[in-house]
Length: 181
Length: 245
Image (tube, rainbow over the protein chains, first blue to last red):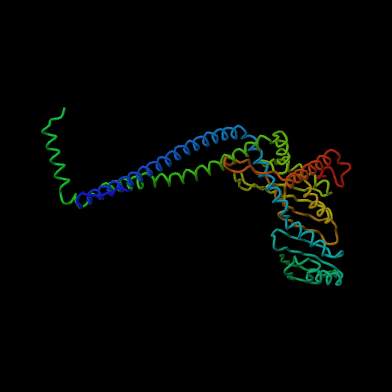
């Protein structure tokens, strides 16, 4: 048969004991939280210290590699100068002289029988041509060539006749200014 | 040993505190409040700054690892470079684009093609523009030649075949009507590039020599061969050996 338990303590004492237990529990929980916080912060600090060590190791390794690269500087200099030269040579070779192209074009479109007296090609965008011929058909052919984009491949924008005259020897002399693309 | 009277006084003070109405009212939360304040101080003065510090450290480590990897690959690439071969490549490239004007060399090549084109050289003069350190520079060679149109065209074609980099700057031709003989004033730009005083920093990537570069090198070598052949065996060439006569 179960014994009957009767708490004969006064209610004030019981209330006091209850509050004391609550307080003790709250303090324990608070201390536990503080301990956890301290442990967490300590771990964090340990990781920071460890990672600083990693940084130090990496710095050392990088310094060694820098020394190694410095000892190979001669090779790097050769390679850099060589590459720079190749780049510039390639750039120059891939941009052909416009004057040379224009000269070839003009000499190709001036028909045989038209005598070139002077040809000046000192600007990339224009040239001066003085020529003469006795054959009006050749002159017509030249003018046709100058105005036909199929012949000059669209490289001539405009051709201006500066002067044209027929001389005593039956030759037609003309001066042209040709504007180039 | 402490004085019992002092201890008694202290005990009385403690009793006064713990029986004070404020203590009685707040005694339940005093200890947790003190711990909370301590916790907050730890969090804001230590934990949070160290957390951000750790993030920075990880970022730094990542950067250092990248740098280490870059240096490592650069060092191993440099080790693999056959220095003698590249020295030869550079010497060949310097024929096309020398480090100085090399006026005798360039004039020799130009005069050689004037001769092989069949033109007569009447005069030759040099222009002397300003020099920029480490940059692409040029000087002009003004040629006054006599011949016919085909020879001038031949000269312009041949000028592309010399190893030394050059470009036609201007051409002016005057001729007498009805005669094939004409006078031409040809201005060629001849290029050179001084050597740089400083080569890029250690952090710059290593330039790569590509197949296109090696093809360019072969082109230069073949042009050097052409010039050598022309100067060694002028009889086989199309034009005159001495361009002044």
